[in-house]
Image (cartoon, one colour):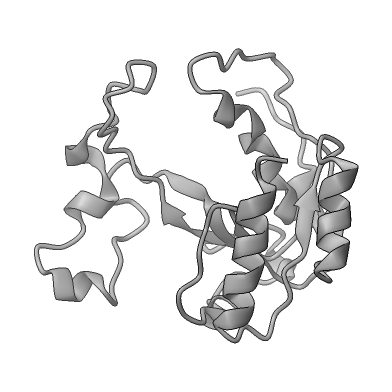
Length: 190
């Protein structure tokens, strides 16, 4: 239920920005009936998705919010859609961003083996709160956001390349062409 206020705000901000694409809330079995009632009351469609967990259990005592992160892989398997933009429920849209639906990505014909399988914003790895359980590499010098431009004006229209900083994507904003072959690809031993 903690995600609901952000989700309702995200829906409102998308509509206020004039997006022509509907928000579909992705919920797991942990989302309560009261939350679904609130979505229904506001006309927000929702889709139940599986709660994804690692095959090897991991403890997230230091940062419990990371326990939910694997479910952000679900959009890759939503093949009933031609394209999915995953937005975290704590995001606020300030202007229309429908152009993300037209971002150049590989088509289904390459089955996830191309150079542009998905796009995402960079993960911020500055670690300004100095959390000790974060990787030692998570410092401002390795962050794509702090190293992308010396010119703040250029940063407004040109982002850092995919290999900038540690080259880690942020699952909170990703654009994917769903592909079942990619979503269900078994892990191979190396």
